[in-house]
Length: 353
Image 1 (tube, helix red, strand yellow):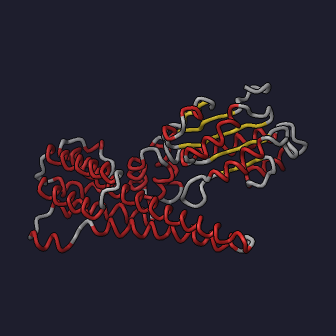
Image 2 (cartoon, one colour; image 1 turned 180 degrees about the horizontal axis):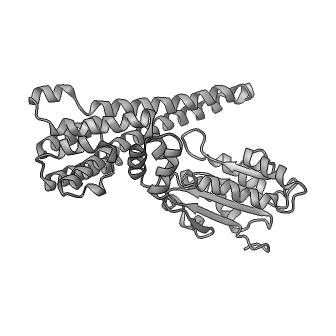
Image 3 (cartoon, rainbow, N blue to C red; image 1 turned 60 degrees about the vertical axis):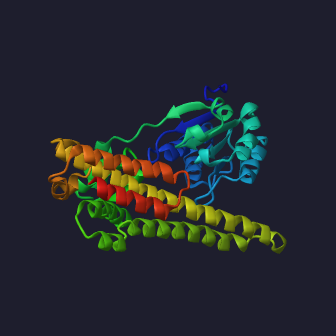
């Protein structure tokens, strides 16, 4: 700990959407503003991200924290005294997306920090951090946001009460995901997952069913999500190229093109995984309805649809279907071919139901 009673390094960890970033910025403001001649102005600049004694590092677009960013924005600056405050604060958002090289570059600074330097690592997957990094940080656990609180917030934003409660339960404490599911593309994705399950429940001719490819909308949505993420990185590249000297442009461009491809893949994978998770949760709700436990349903705004889908179903078979969805999610983590994996899943679901 420093003389003032604050540790030099913290690890804010917990599920996504639990307010870790906001807490990190508020803590940075507290540290930097202490002893400032104009605390209100210092806080305003910290929260706007323009205070010279705050370094906020995070992945560019949807890709990794680069080792060069860690070296230039953290390691080098941590050796310099503050510009105007009594402390420097370094926040690394999504710290688990540092590769080993980036983490090793940070490690020595964490081992021998300047007395004025404080670090906050923010992570939703702390298991991906090197044990040596974690051991040098004081952990601060952020628990999932209670569903009742998320429901209240969504209702305050104009979401219908039943939909607000459903999205809160489906989000498992992630406020950002709850907001996404409550409207727009998220609401459409919920509906697509529901229709995908129903396609395995309803009888139809085999040839007709295969030709319809009921798994295709999930893949199309994932592809669209990936393309949007890639375009965002490319747009950032166009903006940054104007500030780069001509001599260094090619290397800079090549780096961003690589990151754009990674962003596409990451967003594509996340979207497909969410669709399969929503399918699993629909099967889970069907089990609850068949078992007479309607109070445990997540999709509370779809009570009529669930009742229709559950009619005449066997709870054991539905549990098997849920497990098939979860097994496919695990298999996709190992980079199996998506088209074949989803077709196999839907065929097995249809036989099981």
